[in-house]
Image (cartoon, rainbow, N blue to C red; front, side, top):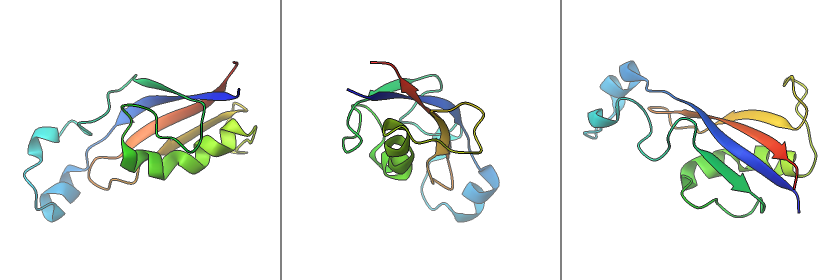
Length: 104
């Protein structure tokens, strides 16, 4: 069974955008996404199933890249074959992920 690993590389926080546009009291999350942690890893075997503990919104954003890597695809702009850098589309607190093929 083909597998890939998703690693949380970076959590960001767009304070200027947050201050101007966010109507919720989320300032306690000013260090970024409250769901994921930098360095956290997820093993994926099924490109149609959200890994346990992974943010469903982020999964929706990166699933196409996971599918590409799982099916031996590559992106010409990455230095390492079988690897993708992707992110969720949360405009206030985007998270950056590394997706890489792993040997089963």
